[in-house]
Amino acid sequence: MISWIQELTAQPIVAGFSTHPDWDHVLWHAELGQAPRYGTAPCATFMRDVRSNEDWKARAYDGLPPEIADETPLDLYGLITGLPAQTVQIPWDGPKVRIIEHPAHAPGHAALFIEERGILGAGDMLSDLFVPMPDVENAANPIDDYLIGLRLLEDVADDVDVVIPGHGSAGGADQVRARITQDRAYVHALRDGRKPRDLRIESPKPGWE
Ligand SMILES: [Zn+2]
Image (cartoon, rainbow, N blue to C red; front, side, top):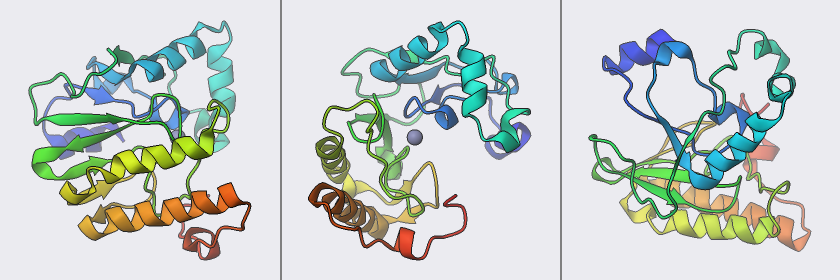
């Protein structure tokens, strides 16, 4: 996996960003080098707490899908450099990347918006594969939070040409609002105690597992 990233970029990796503190977003491989891996302050705090447990590695291992657990290096797992609260862009020399921190899926979740390219990296939001996953473990009001998160993403929707979710496939400009509408409908159904009508459940695409 590592070599294709480097072949693709043909450039050294100078920075990483973890959109949120879920296992599949805080992995790192030694071959990727020493670049800082940024995250929001709450994301970094969450992962520091995780790593402060004496048995964190065993717990992280147990949380991995069994089919990849033995080949997943954990030494660099969750080492996130927290950016100070209110940091609005990634501290690097590349294109300006706006950090859109928002409640919804996980503590300190952030989408990244590369304005000059119209690219929105949505973390675990706006997936065409997964229905919304509100943060029921950590949030006091997970449903309300989710709706706030969708609204904050909607604020930039007009300027997005490509949306890239952490799971599923990228979508074009028309997909941004479509996915927000779809996710909002799902969350409204949860809120109102209705069974959500959602194509992602009714005819799931491969990969939803
Ligand atoms: Zn997640």
